[in-house]
Image (tube, rainbow, N blue to C red; front, side):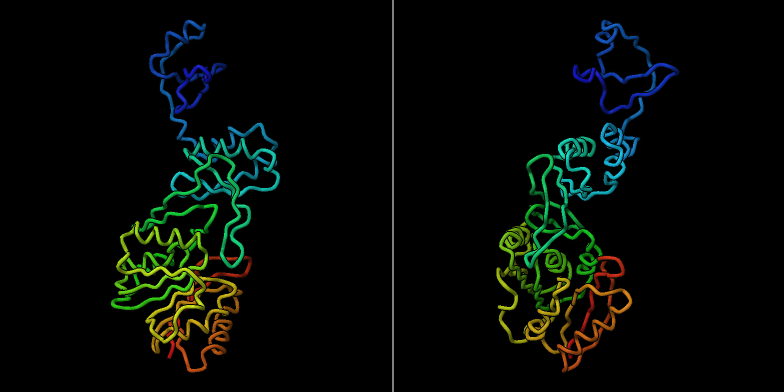
Length: 320
């Protein structure tokens, strides 16, 4: 019946005593009756009342139990692209898994996140297991982010910080984003905060290409100035009212440059990862060493968990 396209795939098979009730597409009653099946009338329940996680598990129930039990229950989407994480035990079944997730979640492409991002250029480790289109557009809080999920990262866990950039009062300011990427913080700040000029520096050529495209996509050409290159090569001279440092683990290496471009009284938004029980001490140590002229910590926020007992924090620091 499935092969003949007789069954309504949007409704679920139900049970009536020892019988199974298979929902039919409109106009298929006579064909089914000629095949020798009894046709009855009744209420068909949408298969979409079943959670997608359960539908996926049902469709893959013939795979080894340890594979089915470890199928991801959460995922990320970028347009019609789905991103999941899988255990090593799933490796022999990637084609089946990709096709099933794509069908049940109505996605055109399924990718496996194999290990987050790596290297100074923050390139993702991504494997396509279904489909071929890897570039799409994500709409978030009125901002359009277009990018290729196999070439550049998108930190969905930073959504609260991107929203905070919208709420900053940067009226008339010159802002430097030292690690702009595809415009993660640049775009919401440029669109909503009132900044006069945002200099967005990005070293990865592929990220830079999408940054330029996203500036145009969001009609921010009059505010954002994209710069391709190492932020340590930016002009100096204390011209920035505010500096964004959206990087982690090696951020302290770039702080001396930030201090040479921020004006006295300006603010640095310093991102980094620290143990949860010593984060404030570590932030003070870093700024004590780099900023002997004085500074004031305006606030510290936890952006997201990074590892056991380690979190990603952002410190808002005013330089004296």
